[in-house]
Length: 467
Image 1 (cartoon, helix red, strand yellow):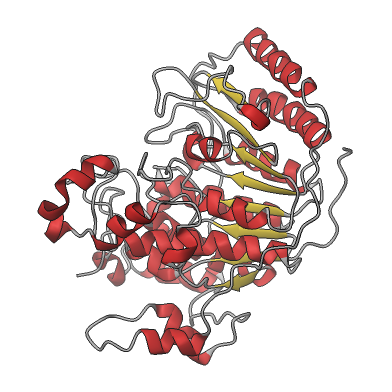
Image 2: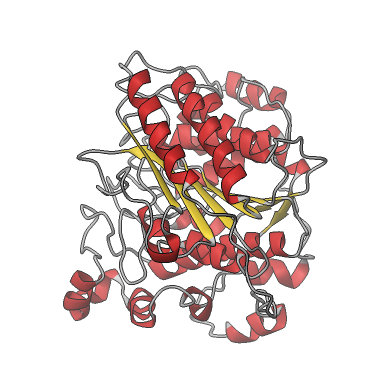
C-alpha cells in the first residue's frame, strides 16, 4: 500500500472537563489532571478552532459489558473507598487495591472515570464509522492494560477494545498500533485469536511491566501472525525509532491492508518520563502520528501512559497539531498551568544523554523476524457479507435529564451542556484562546498569579479534586 497524502481532514476531538477531577491518590503516578492540562494548551494555542470539539456521553454499563464481564463492571460501579471492607474477596479477584500504593486503587468515582474514557473512544469510533470525520481524538482513552475481568497497570476498563469492536461493525480489518513504553497486553489479549484485528506494539521488554510482548508472541488460531511485538531496550532515540517504525508499519499496511487504524499514543516513551526509560522527543513521537496519517485511512488517536505530566500535555498538544497540519510555536502560550512548564516554558523537550542500548544489529535482526512473520499472512482476510450491526446509540438528552432527577446526586456536566447547546458546538470561556501578550503582561506585573495559590505546585499534588 503506497503512502499517499491525505486530503483536507475533518478531525473530531472528544473531551469532558470532569475527567480532571478524578484522583488516584497522593503519590500515585497516574494523574487524569494531565488531560485537563492538554486541553488547556489546545485552547490557548488556538488549535481547537481546527477541531470539531465534542463532549461525549459517558459509556453505559451495557456498552462497557460488550467486552468486560458483568460482575467486574458491577463491582467497579459499587465499590467506594468507604465500603472496601465489603468487597475484600472481589478486590483480590479483580486486581483492585485498597490504597494508592497499589497500581489500581479504589478511588472516588472510579466507575464514572471509566465511563468518560470509554464514552470518548466509543463516540470517536462511531464518528469514524459514519464517515463524519477522518481522524478522531480521545486523549482520555488509551487504557490498554485492562482485561475482560481484571484491572491492570492503572487501567480499569479497556476503551480501546470497545472502540475496535465498534469499528469492526463497519470495517473489515482494523490495525492497532501501540507506541506506549509498555506492551499493549490488554488489547493484544482481546484480539489474539482473530484475523480481523492486527496488533503492533513497540515497547520496552525484559523485567518491565507487564512482562509480556515477546517477539515470539504472534497470535493463535485464526489470529496466528496477526500479533506483532517489537521488544526494545533502554534508551531508544528518535532516529532509531523512526528506522524501525516506518518500515514495519509500511510492511504491515501492505500485508494486512487495514480499513481503519487505532494509534495508542502513550507518552511514557518520551525522554524524562517518571516511569519510562526511552529517549524520544515530541518530534520523534509525533512522527508516528504523521506517518499513519499519510495513509488516508480512518484514524483514531487515543492517549495512554505518561507520568511526567507537563511532558504528556506537551506531547498530546503537539500531536493534535500534527493531526490538523498546523505548526505551532515552541514558545508556550500563557495558560492556566503555565508554572508547570518552567524553567524554559517551551513546547519541545531535548533528549537526554542516556545510552541507546538498541544496537543497529539488534534492531535489524528483530525487524527481519517480524517481516518473516508478515510473509506468513496468506492474504488480507475478508468478511462474509452480513447485516451491519447498529452503531452505538447514546441516550437522548431528554432521557438523560429524566434519569438524573435525584436532587442529592450531582448531575454530569454533559447533561447541563446538552440542555442548552447543540451537540456539534463548543463554547469558549472568556479567557480561552487569548493572545499571549495580555497574559504575559499579567505575569510580568506579579511573579505569582493570585489564582496560582489555589493550584498544586508539584506533580504529586496535581489532579487533587477541589475541596
